[in-house]
Every structure is written in C-alpha cells, then in structure tokens.
Image (cartoon, rainbow, N blue to C red):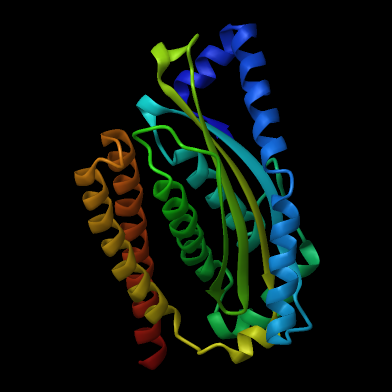
Length: 270
C-alpha cells in the first residue's frame, strides 16, 4: 500500500533497509497466512445466512503499509481507499493490489443508477465509510507503544446492497538499527466488496441526503473519540493530528456534497 516518508527515503538509499523491510513483510505474511481464508469464510457465511444468492464482486485485493512511529499517518490508507472508490464508481484505474470487476460494477450501476441519480454520488460516501471502518480498526491497536500481532475482521453494510468484508493484520517492530529504536508499524489490509440487488431491496432505504447527514454526525463523533484517545495516551500527537485532519476534510467534502444534493433536489421541485 505505501510507506511513510522517512521509510521511503531510507529504503531508496540503503540496501540493508530494503532487505529489512522485505523481511518484515515476509514475517507478517507468514503470521497472517490464514486471514484470507477467514475473510472468504465470512463472505460465504454472510450470504448463506441472509439467503442472498445474487452477490457480485466489485473490488478485492490486499496491500501492505509501513509507518514510522514518529510520523504516524493514515494518508497511505486513505489514498488507496480514494483510488479504489474512483475505480469502482467513476471508472478510474485501480491502484496496485486492487482488482475491480467490471461486470460487478456494471450490475451495480444498472441497478442503482436510477435510484441514486448517478453512481458518482456514492463515491464520496462509500470512500468515507470505508475509511471510517479501517481507521477505527487501526487506531484501536494504538500508536504510542508496541503492537502485538493482531488481526481484526469486519463485515459491514455500506448501504445500497454493498457489503464490505475486510481484515486488518497489524504488527510492530522496534528498529534497533534504524530510527533510534523507534517502532515501525506494519499493516496488512485484505478487502472484498460485493453488491447484491436482493440485499439492496431488503435494506431500509434512505435518501442520499439522509446518508450524508448521518455520516457527518458520525465523523464528528469520531473526532471526539480521537481526542479521548489522545488524552489517555493511546494515540500519539502525530496520529491524532493527521487523523483528525482527515476527518475534517471528509466532513467538509460531505457537507459540500450534501449542499449540492439539496440544491439539485430543490431545482427538481421547482
């Protein structure tokens, strides 16, 4: 997925550090070898339990992310989420590590186009939903001390028949040769997003205006929770600052989209 700036810089300069990162990635891959199977088991269970028989693939993939403790940021993760969202909803090129199923996106566009007006109206909302889920998982591991290897699996409805299945595996390494004994956090993201017309029909329908209003309220609650985490020492100042800024940007973008949707609705009524 990505690497924080100091890691990128050192990787470009030193063969020993490149080898070190490769070793860390191999170790995390070994520890999380069964996670992909667990995600697929969750997928099968969800659709079997709910008797949805028409699920189609939208996007799936996996990415690694290395973050230096002193410059913790979710920028890499947010960038990949935004790129995937554009690939699914606006026909963009999927980023490395992600595979977009064109037949699934066409099925979703055909089914949802008339209901939501334009698929592009969902792009910002879905990207915000996915960022919210993943960031909360990552921050729950903590950013101020060592992280013991851990995996979190999530299955979450994104609305409109879209279901996200994801796993985040995390580990940390205290770099004795690099970064003055600071920690390097490493994350493995696995994700699988599917679409079902049957699920869309069974879900309580909300207008896009209502969805964005609810999302803004949730994001503001997240910012309050971040402040609490900063106060109890589970988040570093860097993690708090960058994540809070990301939520500020999401709130502003959602408010702008909300205004545009309300203006468009008012014009239709006149």
